[in-house]
Amino acid sequence: MNLIQNVSQMRDYRSSLAQNNQSIGFVATMGALHQGHLSLIQTSLAQNDYTIVSIFVNPTQFSENEDFGAYPRTLEQDLALCEKVGVNAVFAPNTQDMYSTDEISFNPPCKMGYILEGFDRPTHFAGVLQVVLKLFHLIMPHRAYFGQKDAQQVLIVQKMVKDLFLPIEIVPCPIQRDNDGLALSSRNIYLSAADRERALCIPHTIMCIKDEIQKGQTEIAHLRALALEGLESMDRIFYADFYNHSLENLTQIVSGDSIFLVAVKIGQTRLLDNLWI
Image 1 (tube, rainbow, N blue to C red):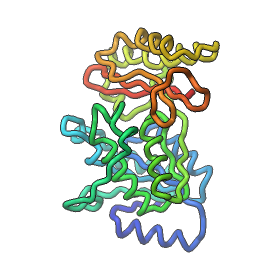
Image 2 (image 1 turned 180 degrees about the vertical axis):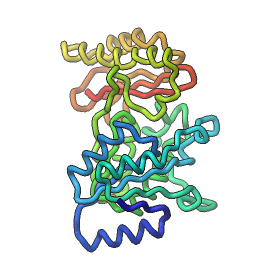
Image 3 (image 1 turned 120 degrees about the vertical axis):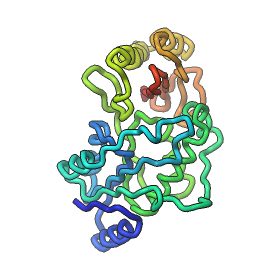
Image 4 (image 1 turned 135 degrees about the horizontal axis):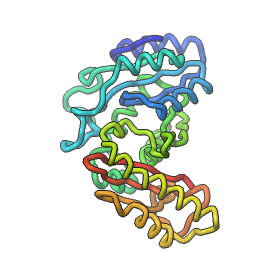
């Protein structure tokens, strides 16, 4: 496995691959890899000749009051996992290599980028798109793999690729859950045992909503009330509502174009989850 630690090396490595005319899959991560990341990597390995993983804790997507400094960094462990599963290369640059002074900014779409996660974190998606676009230009993958847990991110990245005519296929991959049903996240390590137990109401609520829809319920008002009741023990509910794939509010469930999105606070930890319908 190749460890690539700066932009120049990444360009050289990518140029060497271009001569082989083989498919390249890419998984962008901030490290602290878990089974959710591993599922993305394994899907890429199965679908491409080469798989490249980036490990970079991106400062531009963190607000001033967020946990950039405390975000878990486990590079040696992450590299060992990538090598074990057969990743071809890991790109692990530093901040100085990825960003210069007086950077050109890149804003998310007005309607999709400043609601939900973008409402509480208004600079978040600008930072996400900035770094993802940089990585796409450096790595030039044929396919890029993103977890559906970060549903808003997936939809906005898909829109960026479409709007900017980037020759990349975005492959959304299913949410991975722990044995107790909690969606896997690098931030789960912040939860105390008691808070983790409380957090299980999130997957339980999602399963209740799924069951209601499978029984034929399509009325949003009923489903929203069910969600809020299930999440009432959370310290804060940032949002718990239903949207289409353009992130417009729904009045009724539309199969194949509906998502239930939820973000809550438990203790000091913000947790996301969702149900693609």
